[in-house]
Image (cartoon, rainbow, N blue to C red):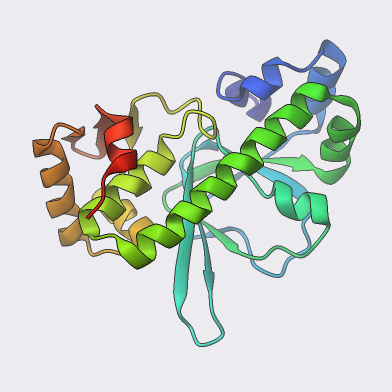
Length: 224
C-alpha cells in the first residue's frame, strides 16, 4: 500500500480534505524507510518536507555543543512533525532518529503550502497540533526538573498516547523498555521498575514489547 493509503486511517485531517486535495496529497507524498538508529532528519538541514511516521517510532532530540543530549518527545505511527520549521522557513533545530525500523512519509513544502493556503481543515489541524505540542513541551520541562522516575515514565507514555497528536495509537502501543529509556533519559532497569509500579497502581498493563494504557488521565496527573 502507498504511504497515503496507510496514513489515511491514522490521520483524520486527511479524511477532512476534499477530493482534489486528497488526490494531490496522494500524488505528492513520498515514502522512505529508515533503519533503527539512523537519522530521519538532522539538525541544521534545510527543511523541505513535513514529516509523518507511517510505522515505527521516532525520537526528537538535540545535542549541545558540549555533547549533552536532550530528548524532546517521541513520535509514534500516525504522528507528524516539523510544521513549525516549515512555517518559519528556518533550518531544522533538532535531530529525528528512528528508534526502530520505521516507514516515513514526506510531504513536499509546495504541497504543505498549497494546503495551508486552501484548506480550512488542514489549518485547523495545524492549530490543534501546535497547541498540543506547546503544552507537551511545557510539561517536558516540568518532568525534567521536578518529577521522579515513575512520573517521568508515566508522562512520557501519556505524551505518546495523546489522542489529538496520535489518533491512530489507540490504547496499546508497541514500545520496548529500552525505547522508553531513550525517550525518558532513564536506564532500562529504572524504566522496568517504574512500569511495574505503574502497573500495580492500575494505570497500565505491561506486555512483552508493548504497553496498554488503562488510565490516561492517571498517567497525565501522576506526580512525585
